[in-house]
Length: 491
Image 1 (cartoon, rainbow, N blue to C red):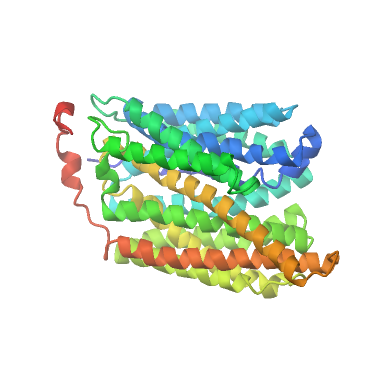
Image 2 (cartoon, rainbow, N blue to C red; image 1 turned 60 degrees about the vertical axis):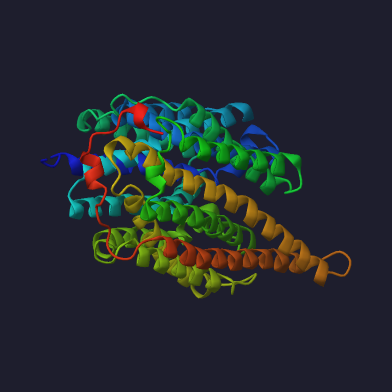
């Protein structure tokens, strides 16, 4: 089959859409204080600007991934772009807290439609192994560097324009991607005779909603509140029901063949573990730079540039040079251990550390590790998947990242708060002095970095053990070419 002559232009369109999605995960973080002052909502309500996006995005990913397979990836890609742009316009023009949160929830819903559509388009557009490696290298670079870029862009827009431009910037990116999608992306293959697994959708969407909501409440309140453990328990139960149902459904939402492949399962687990620990890198490092070192929003964004540049470069190098030669296993192990080393290095920070002496080195090391991981995951998580399953396989990657981020938010916030409180209890005699409070806060950050290091080391062992040795091979090619079994024959 001849390669698509427009494939590299299509890659540019997909990369534009992906950077919009990834940017939106972090770009609003630096704009929140300004939005709070402008709209007058409380500090307790502030978390919902982030949580509303995460709830709708995380709970709808698998549903939207299968929807892309059933009705066509071009259709869902363009619908996701248009809806995301419209929601961003509403959010930028918000004159109340409820309007902003509704817009963020809508962004998450359309992001859930867009993210798997973009990645599955990439997986089905590039067939040649060398070209596929380059394409996934670019995609991995965008994914790895996008979080740091969002911090940089969010700081710049908030400082020099307005927090509203953290929303309006999506209109520019979406317009470019829509134009490219209409002109370049051809009609996509649909799953013949496919039907939507409604019970599976209800179980997994409800389960993901409960997990993300439960972890969000644990982060902002306590693990002991019913709104935390109650929803977490319900989420686990619903996901167990979903897993059992998928083994029996005639046309399952997430076919077991997707996750039973060791390399793909290893990729999904890798992005979940990495997502949980990576949260500590972005959130607590930004807190440290702004609250302890007194950096402005734009300065803290610029300070993250080494991580952004290295992660993007290593994602490309990893996919084009390392994965074809060595396979994903050493990439994951090396990436996790580099990230762990960066986290251990960050535990040496103090209340008045200098950027060059305390932060630059860890950012460089961590950027290299993140690039290796993100570059590998996108390629391995969709490798050998039949075109009819490309959407749901792509959604599984985003689901792992979203769930990992939610777990990391709750776990690391709790650890930081406990470590800070414990430090003050051990060292304060009466009312603590401001210097002691600052030391306690930094102690909370360093404790989080130690935990992140431990998570990355555990990820290197567990995820590295799950992945197969050697370069990726294509045993699934036969399955791609085989006619699918009739639905009645599937158990």
